Image (cartoon, rainbow, N blue to C red; front, top):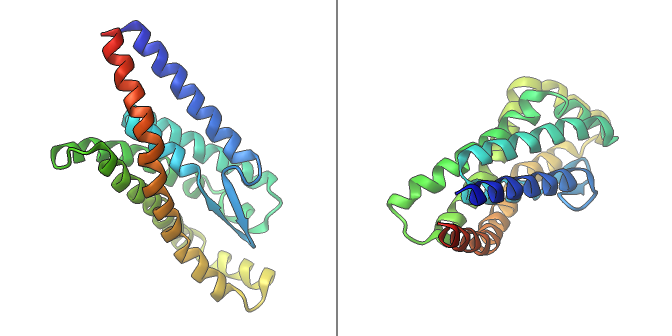
Length: 199
């Protein structure tokens, strides 16, 4: 039991390290597209939430949010500086992604026996949740400022860009639905074998 707890702490620390690296190393976790970033960091958070539970998911999501907050000050993007220096936008959605992904994975056990299918559903859910929450908070908290900043930065392109922002959640969700069960399934089997070995 003690060995399992130590292993879980080490594994959580590894996931946190991966999230920090993804947040600050270009193209490792954020793929820049003009003034927006397509993120893949949520995949790490969701995998951790599925394997380790909602508490770890909440921790990983919060770490991701804090990294987004810090990165906004150093990215050099006026849009990121406007949006993600607001902790409600940078941190809250990411923390909820980790929390709710972990809870959903457990809840789905009652109706879906396949862990791969559960992970796929949770992967898509977590990704779409992140996109929906971030865009909703931008709209309600800084909608006018955001529109003005886009207009000043890109002239007539904002409508086009907002379409991209609104739809980039779809490829992110598809990627998450595929990658989470592939990587998470392997890690989940390793975790279960280790638990049985140390039981």
